[in-house]
Image 1 (cartoon, rainbow, N blue to C red):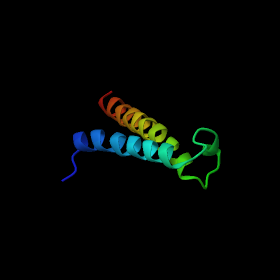
Image 2: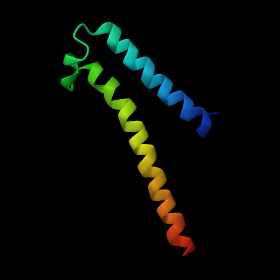
Image 3: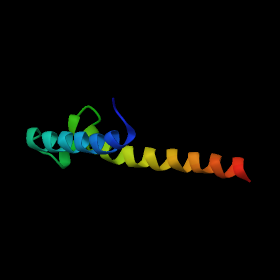
Image 4: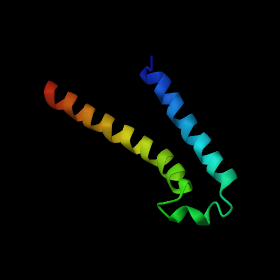
Length: 70
């Protein structure tokens, strides 16, 4: 149902939609994003967290592949 290419496109689009939603709902959008209780904080955190997770996941996978074949 959910393949990797579909998730690669779907997750950033959902993150972007959440970012636009919180930008339209929050009155003090950039300054009000410092509290962890705010939805805005997590809508800014999610687009940053996903690429970092993917990078380190691929880094680990590549390290395992290189270690196994040498």
